[in-house]
Length: 421
Image (tube, rainbow, N blue to C red; front, side, top):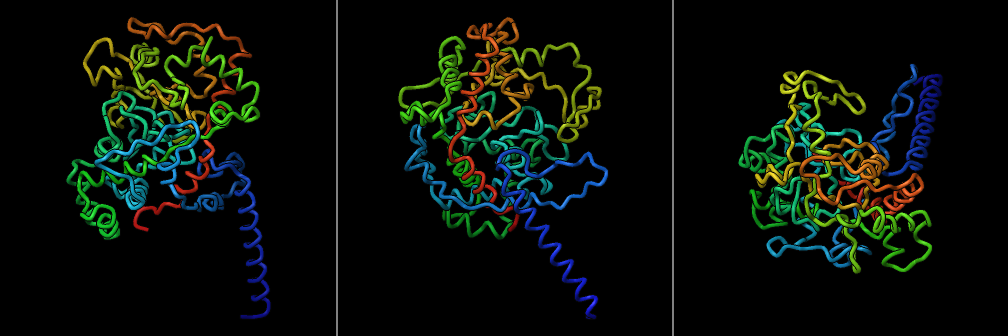
């Protein structure tokens, strides 16, 4: 190499090193929540990406089982089913399966693509998630934080255990697209990197039961509490919660009547009664007159309205979502959906079963108006008469429910192996 070429090479190396240092500095200043890549500057004609966001996704494994022996402040002991005791081996295996795109029919979709760690283990950027081959999923992706405490899963409560629940997205034509349970089992059996892990966790090869048990074990330890509210209310720290949030909590359990469905107990708070309620959201979505055209999400922030016949070919047909009625067949259950827990609620926009309310303030304004009247509207839903100051305080309270270990759980998720790695 000539001296001139050598100097040129050194200049390029130094320049690249400086860019990398700058990228690390930028990323280290970013929050662990939100979109997984930096998107500022797209509007500039001279924009160039350097994928610096990938640096922030180098995670750190955590001891996830600590929540079993020591649940976070404000939460009860984590239920551990006798038929599937939680072990470190099962959690590690379940986490790998959760992030593995090879479990889908065409190796492109994982559980984690709808339940994104840095977006509250939900999905902030689309009202309805997109599954295999660009097909829209029917309902908004619920968070999987604290699902260990649920005895009814999905928005309509059609499943009763995490072990059973995982098979619905694996087999759904618009989610992971597998045609049968056997196909999923054969797919995993063909992946050499799983054989040893299943033997270590269950002392047997993957099957319908052990696959469900593994993924459920990972989901069951995604427990998040010890929020500012918990440290104030259950921990007795008078300075842990801001004055607006304290006022908001008083509104929450008095004038706002929120506590009627989002329950708070003396010993702990799940912020859910575990029941099903009709707020009018499902009624409005089903009965609105403009159903000859439907919204099809093409990309985050990019929505196109198409004729319903075209929507059917993309998997986005109007399903006439009737909520709990589709499970029970009881007319009084029309448009009822499970009461969601409110912990980490500020991380899990958009809201409601269909993602139709973009922000928490929109949710509060919706309830302040008394929902959408219909013949089977829940009797608990009525206009609240809150003024702007009270809504601000109530919002401050909801924002105080973010658990102290969220960043730890996100960093652990980022450390998960992807695919065959």
